[in-house]
Image 1: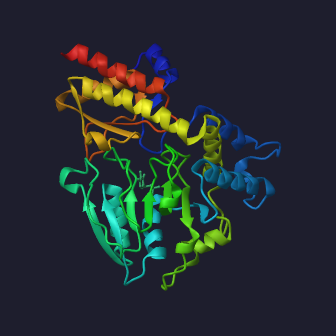
Image 2 (image 1 turned 45 degrees about the vertical axis):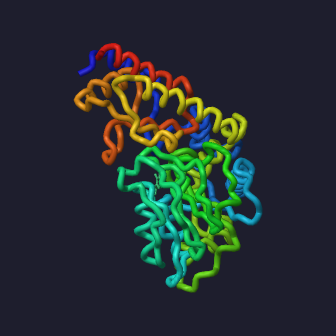
Image 3 (image 1 turned 30 degrees about the horizontal axis):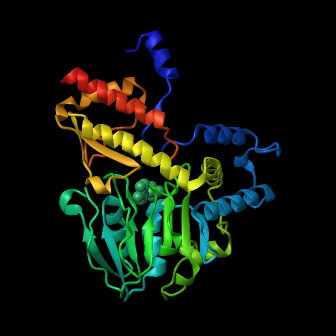
Length: 368
Ligand SMILES: *Cc1c(COP(=O)(O)O)cnc(C)c1O
């Protein structure tokens, strides 16, 4: 048990949040969100107790859409939606809306989330797994595989949250690409025009859990002839500006605050610079430190989720304790990889990564 004094110290010590998701948000975003939960602007009401059809909330939706378009440079060929159901619902949503029963789609299998997308798509059409890195526990991104141009689309997971790999070069193909960008959306500039659909659950790099961003090319819709319930049809949500039913108002609002913060810091180029710096700091230490080893293939290392092991796994408990004592939270690895995973999304500061690196350095000098 803590002594009284230790307990107080622990309670007030600044925590460095390495959770994979729901994950770190900028402090100023949390402060403003908290304030708005009590009293929103000059309305004299909480953001949580106003109509989604009030002019004040419509202004939130409009600004959120405008910021997505501005930050990612999204043209009017695309609709921007804020939906409920998580990225996991987009696994079936995409196939249900874009893959006819006698048609085929290519899927790149780079981890658990890709596999789940594949499983859902199989209910709606033919799925061709174009390549998989399952043979080496998803520690790399497959390259040099063939993709049939007969497919309706190619589905990829741009960042593999669990395995710590990221796709830095899009596959060479002329067919439209659908990407699950849940864990690296807004982390660097991307060319949206290469995609027919981009989706992302907010709770990794964009906001709190509860809303999913969908960016979809309007001209790919309306081509399958199955019956689709209204709520599961992209057109329904496009025609109603994501307010066919009550949208997840608070997660959308907090996502808006996060996008304002990204813009204020200089947009996605600035995020990319920050994220490269943080990732290099941590990976350099993993490579330098004699006790640790990274799990992902070097050229495919994620800038968002850094997975690493202690060469001697019996030391894990001791290292976890040191990290915890330094205020580092959420570094235990996913059970399918083991070891450690430090998620260093946009809102993580370089100082936070430095604290973890210092723990690793001290741990090495103590133990060698
Ligand atoms: C977290 C995550 C998901 C699942 O998101 P939910 O919003 O929980 O459904 C899907 N894909 C990736 C890449 C993720 O990181």
